[in-house]
Image (cartoon, rainbow, N blue to C red):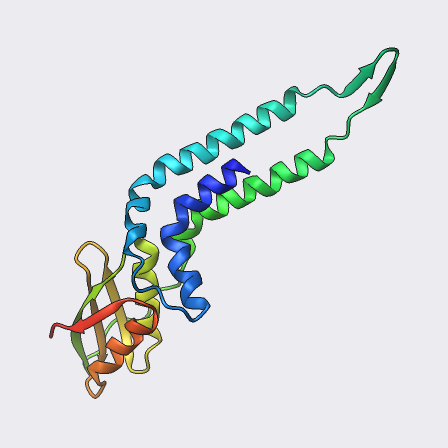
Length: 182
């Protein structure tokens, strides 16, 4: 249980905003989660260490419990099943930032497109950037979008007749703030 909790905290900065957006609450104002991104390696190491400890304890547990002269076999099925569920959960949380929003790149920009740049605020991790990128790429008229977490900007290649406000709206629907730069 502690391993699952540690891994959930390690990925909270990524799945928390996604959950709030899915519930229709928006992810604005969650910048307090940013420090968890720095603690992610420590939390994941803790989760893996706790899982290893639980496995070690389970493997050292006796196969039978003897009381006096009577011995009763101990079933390990339930404990090992729960340990397996915990391991899959920890691995899922560990992989979440890398899997969230991943999809094949769209075709490159064509000659009939314009390059637009937006300043995006509120992103705290790679999953945030992929969420914004996915929202921009789903906007009708967008050929391709690239989002830089480090620079806090998004570059979009879209049809020349696309209204820039549509891009700002798409980003703000994900819970982040955006403004056109050029």
